[in-house]
Length: 389
Image 1 (cartoon, rainbow, N blue to C red):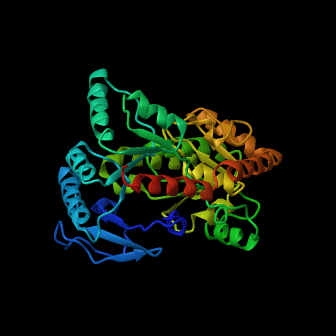
Image 2 (cartoon, one colour):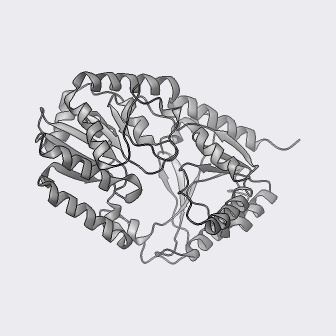
Image 3 (spheres, rainbow, N blue to C red):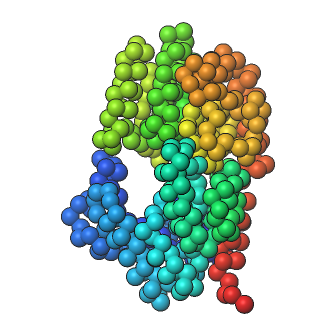
């Protein structure tokens, strides 16, 4: 969404082709009800940020049929001379059943681009991993170009024996939107809405509440500080996946037990999904991401751009693209004790918070500007759209 205006300025005509969400992913506040729509039907075109959005009604439950319906609708759309794209950028999880569609699109001269944005899971059994690796090889060899947002992800693609062209384009940060706080009124209003006073300390995490993001580790670490620092609050901005997905019931129960055991559950605030996330960064004193695996985490870059000191754990996919530990951020082991100890360093040391905040902002300004990423994406799209000699 943030890229659309800049890409249009770079002479790119964009249309989004998507589907209706799973029942479990529909926000309770959503003004649209897709439940009664016929599966496979196209909804009226809408526009978001000036970009046309075409949406197909998909089955409301998980399963292979969702992919099948989407693929068929996308193929029909691309075959229409009025809509036929030069380049198709695929966003989201690719599944092996899409291989025939990808090959058909390429045979029609439509260039297919896919972005690898999150590091893979750790290996389980060798047999399972070999099968998974084989599927990845077939799938990613069926596209014309792959974009990775950092070097570790490019190496991951290459390690699987995939010879498709791979470009590294970092996630761009809108430095006009994400910047250090300038007006105290905005910051105080947000904090006051949660009962956080001016002299309190606000720890912030942005992202889905789920096991991969380490929400349980973060709450356990915060609980270790809660009794010693009664003015420290924890704010979690993002969707409650633990409430949306039945398979996360045990994880949700773990969070509830940790909150009760802390004796200060009233100082942990779940805001849900927010449109004003930039303001929440500016209202924070410390940002933390104890994730298991990432690619180029936007939340870390946005926090840095906002001048907020950052703490991360050594997630799979961590690289020098986000700077170096002790200079642009602090690194803690991915366990509650280590994370609590690292957070405490920042809680008690204002000078260190200021230093990391300034350093992080400078790093993003120098290496991760949105304009630079847009230039590279636009150049790639134009290159792919050129006819073969």
